[in-house]
Length: 230
Image (cartoon, rainbow, N blue to C red):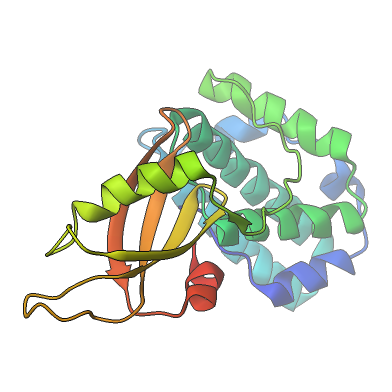
């Protein structure tokens, strides 16, 4: 969904000196210029612009122009966070790695000398251009795995059974939730009547409707499933 910021870029930004241009909020006029070549303001179009500015920031870092790189990285950050928040309002799952990437960039920019007030004002100005609520620009801590509740397990089992060849005799094991996704250990029968062994059903929660979907199986250990949940 969102751009992934390279670790090297984050580290370089954190060590970059701050200049007046880099430390200024992105004004409404500059946002108009940034989005001037965008045919529409849908998620994919805006994220393409964010990716371009992120790539330009990397080039500037490598050429030694760190203040300008910081400024372009702030543009990429605010655009990406805007789409992230828009997706959450629409009830779409947000991947943990995407959240980590956004948080990492924002933390690096603050470490480079940008104030949260400057970043937030840039988001407010972008919201004015897009005609929508600005991104909160709050660094969100990634949620760790937690055991599914009894009610969640029951709802997940109903979804998983729809995907099984033989839904009458599955053996259900551990279920853990990570953000808006879950991994549920299932041992079910194949078309020959034998048990397949433990596999992981991956499920997705719609935060808006509080309903689970998915349930497709992957042949990963439970811990690996949780680590790769995105």
